[in-house]
Amino acid sequence: MTGLPPRIHPLVRSFLADRDGPAGLLARWGSPLNVLFPEIFTANVAGFRDELDAAGLRYRICYAHKASQGRAFVRAALAAGIGIDVACPGELDSALAAGFPAERIEATGPKGREFLAVLAGSGITVNVDNLWELSELTQLARAAGHRVPVLVRMCGLGPGRPSRFGVPAARFGAVTELLAAVRDAVDFLGLSFHLDSAEAGDRVQAVDECLRLLERAWAAGLSPRILDIGGGFRQAFADSPEPFEAYGQAVRRGLAGHGPPLTWGGATLGYRYEHGGIRGTLMSGKYSGTAGGRDMLRELTASPLPGQGGRPTARVLRENLIELWLEPGKALVDHAGLTLASVEFHQGGLRRQRAGEPGHKRGQDLPGRPGGDA
View (cartoon, rainbow, N blue to C red):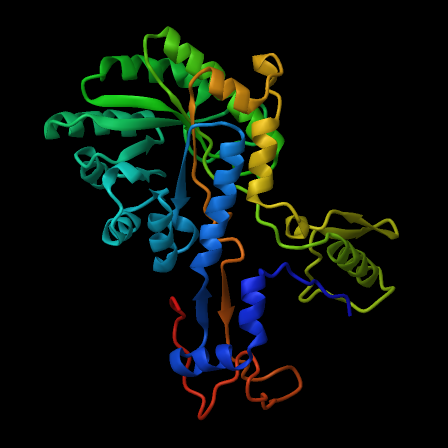
């Protein structure tokens, strides 16, 4: 049988090697159980910082809370001295309860008027997604007597993959016109974007286009000084791509009838049988990746920008005194957690687990309960 060995952090591997440890946690807390490792989260933050420091950039990292509701990660982000990105009132409550001050919180994603009203007088940076949000926020800020720090999220940045969020770049003239009219209520910090892509080339293209938009903003008399490249950084799922490539080949052989089938319920994982052969691409190809978020960030900061004379991204940002913001989520929790579960039965009948196996519970089995922080 073709196996798919995952990358496992040494701390997690050590935890799993002690069979009594996982079994004891399940006996105490029930199944399934989420186990988090904030030490790994902190190490991932340090990796991002190392890359940004090596590039000589001014920067701010915000943990994207949506990646996990685990309170241990929120506390780890606070202790690490980074910011936090919240996308709903519940995540904001979680950040405030952990002790995050307003100046280390950024609100992203689509926002209704009620959420905007909370943000308007809070001192939290608001990453607005459209002109309606910007207009509503301005009115609420004036009513509260506050000036709100604002980023404007853009989309339609070149011919790359589209984004679900942001103001189309084609409407940037309307953005600058509105920002110029609301200086009393809005401190325009800069631009941001979100990409549904982990390809470094797409992100380089978006950075290049945003820099051109920043130049237009400066020409309009505005003073943006931040470029926020969002999240979407890669995770490293494997130490080597070879086992995944072998698995893909085994799937193809099974679909062609030349080996045991490895799929279930008619799933083909992106392949199709056509004209006597297998065509298509394995849909889960990203899980063979060996490069993580830190590697992707290093590639981005070193990449030449076509619209800036081919100068590297980091150099252009330094020379123009632009601060780089980013909101990694999955890349910060990468390898920092696992789920334990008891095995009740397997195909072919019931099986008694050995004491100390992952998932074994001493004594009588109890109904499972939702997992939580451990």
